[in-house]
Each structure stands twice: as structure tokens, then as C-alpha cells.
Image (cartoon, rainbow, N blue to C red; front, side, top):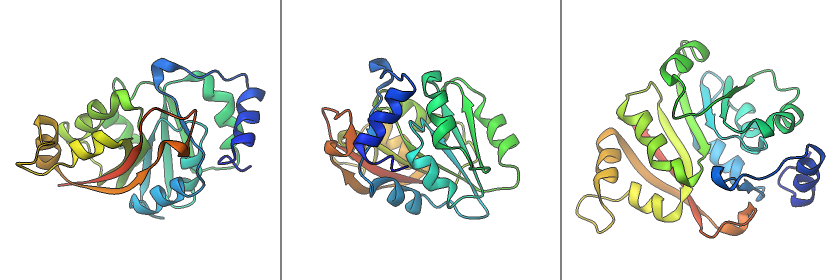
Length: 208
């Protein structure tokens, strides 16, 4: 199933009666190059784990499953349950956890699901929770090696801003204190369905 094909994606969503939630900021990737590139750059390999936040229809999840020993995807919207049951079928190293990433016990999740593994976060983050999610991982010193996340372009510039630059603020200072941030590549708004009003970028934060 080619989930990067917009016709296939629409058919999948229609078949399962899925409806987009504006409040959850749902935009699914329909560019075939984006998710393989993210998965390749996130750092996860055959002896490590990948934690995904907001798997959507499972495009990035499947790319991570091909590289990592284990993938755990945290999803809030139960409306995606039948969709993911179909798209992730036959992937024994993938587990979906239903809940709010800002509320669940991430320390316990990481300990129980990835015992003895290095863990890499890889996600297409909803714009409205970008900073809270990133800061939770960094400030709580959760045991992850790096976060490779897609965020709004302006947020990427702000999060990775260097000291003394116009974009540098409290959040970017905290990010730089806990990690080594870098912008990896841009992602135009045309790569999503529905098309958002802003462009995105993928950033990587190597945890210190």
C-alpha cells in the first residue's frame, strides 16, 4: 500500500470513516521522500528502539520498523485505531500506545518497552505541542539519545537559534543547554494532506 499516494490515502481514510480533527492539528505526509529520509537520519538501528509521537496513518512508523529493533508509537486519536490496524499489520516489532504524550508516564514507558536499548525519538509533531513535547523530554532528562522531529519552519529556526541571534529566546536557550540542535532539511507545505498554511522543517536534537 502506497500511503504517500494521495488517492490511496483518501481511500484508506474513507474506508475507515476517519474524520480530521482541527484541534489535533492533523496533516499527513504525502511526499514519498520525507519519511524515509527522517527515519534514516534519526539514528535508530537494528539494536536500538524508536519512539514515535503521533504516527498518523503509519507512514513514518513503517520506515522506522524497517530500521529499528522495536518501534513504539504514541497516538492520542482513537479514530486512527482501525487505520493503523490495517497499515501496521504484519509488523511484529511495532506497538501502538494510546494516550496523550504530555500526560503518560514516559519514563515508565521507556523503561518497560526499551529495556537495555538506546532510544531515538522520531516524529511529525503537531505544531501546537511542539515546544511542550520537546521540553518534556529534555528537562525531565528522559533516557533518549536524540529527537528528530518535524516542526513548523519558524519553530525550527527558533528552536535551533544560536546565542545572540534574533530568534534566540528562552526555549531555544533551554534546547541548546540540554542538546545539540540542528536543522536537517525543509519540508514544503505541499508535502502534506490536508495542505497546512505553513511550511515545515525537520530538526535533530542530540541529547547531551
